[in-house]
Image (tube, rainbow, N blue to C red; front, side, top):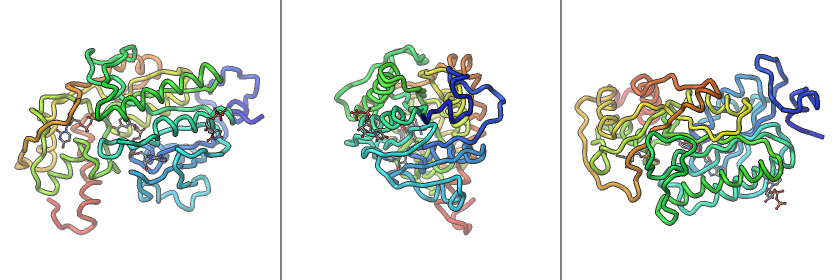
Length: 338
Ligand code: NAD
Ligand code: UDP
Ligand code: UDP
């Protein structure tokens, strides 16, 4: 029978399914749903570089072919245009499930989190693959505990405008644990905190992409509310490292993956001004409903059990994103660049 353990070449001699660290192994067959998106495409780069065969499943809802185009022609890379809300048959060892309309302008009214996750869990069960869910810090809602530990159950409005996303991910976590307990599927759960970097959607309304695009276009930075709400911003390479350690490790989680450096939106605007344009103006706008007042991960569990912590600070990571945005907004020619 095809199974994750057999594929690693240990068979029943390694009933725990753990990969002995440092042991050279055969390349794995890995599905990355949402692999044409921001985080997914960076993960795909690392997996391909490691020698694995990667199948990206994406419906290009928010992802882009350009993010993975550099792998076209590589026999270890396949791209399937498919909506994970529909069943899918594949034979693989690991499933990184990232497919999800991830930003407020995209996530409303979409059943991906529930139906898509169910299908990918069904797939994992059928082929004996290990399944990793990318959940979110939004499962903590507008948190009453600060910083947030994985043991916190959250403060979520079940009928609010954001509930399709946060309750959707909470349901996805529930399904994941049910398949683990009920069907013995090997699962991993990551709760990802705000992440930024190259290839982020330019116009999806997230704060870092908005501020960077606005500063480059010489438009005012739009701060919602009084700008004193906080977030903790993680550079994408740190996240990818955490996701891979989680997948390869022996712990189910959930694990918070985020950078504990906490900033108010006004402080973020200042860092963007320092990095791009000290003269960029700030404009205040009404805040959205149910906006969490503060958010900062407690990453003690990931440090201890995965040996992971972020390495890239906001001031180091932001310039790397800015060069990508500059390129995408202005193209190769120098128009508008400073
Ligand atoms: P993204 O929008 O760039 O990537 C999501 C990808 O999923 C896109 O390529 C999109 O086309 C694809 N997709 C959406 N619905 C699909 C469907 N039904 N079938 C197939 N493909 C579909 O977003 P991202 O920031 O890369 O997020 C990746 C994952 O990480 C998501 O699950 C998201 O919820 C989670 N996450 C991200 C952040 C963050 O700050 N970026 C924070 C918390 C959680
Ligand atoms: N599924 C899938 N690919 C597979 C196996 C299952 O997409 O290789 C889907 C299947 O269509 C179903 C879901 O995953 O909608 C859950 O499958 P499971 O076998 O757990 O449940 P069942 O089909 O028995 O209700
Ligand atoms: N925000 C802002 N200006 C913008 C976009 C967002 O001040 O142009 C604020 C938003 O109100 C929230 C924070 O930035 O308080 C983070 O928003 P984002 O949508 O990036 O992430 P999330 O709310 O999902 O953490």
